[in-house]
Image 1 (cartoon, rainbow, N blue to C red):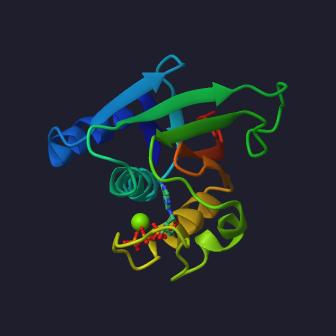
Image 2: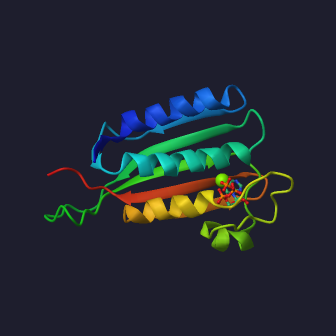
Length: 162
Ligand code: ATP
Ligand code: MG
């Protein structure tokens, strides 16, 4: 489906602000012009909602959570089916962080990190996110520091309409 990413992310963030009330501050930072891309809006919503839900759940009250949207432009190609540019979504939180030795398994179903304490969860969100990202031919990375926070980085090849 053809969708406009800046407006879409704005709507997702506005919705999140409503759901969280003033428990957290949620910000959208956009580093691109409006851009139309061929993506499945349902899957993208799954990705962003799950990552936001984690950012909220594993961060202290009042913490600032950001979604940054940008495009990394690659060399110009003539084949629209092999785009070299990617859309980058970065979701950053000031939460509990993830131990280095747990990072590998977190995208598998029912896997949780060892530092969750009493925070409840089933361990399925990230498995769903990974599926949705891969269905778009993309990949996901985590940068995290214990007690400092985490950033989930989703990169998806940018297929623009020809
Ligand atoms: P649910 O299925 O309800 O989403 P969950 O949040 O426990 O449960 P995932 O979303 O799959 O499961 O996340 C897996 C694990 O990764 C979490 O249990 C937690 O240990 C860790 N994790 C995920 N996101 C974060 C985050 N933003 N900060 C710290 N730890 C996180
Ligand atoms: Mg979760």
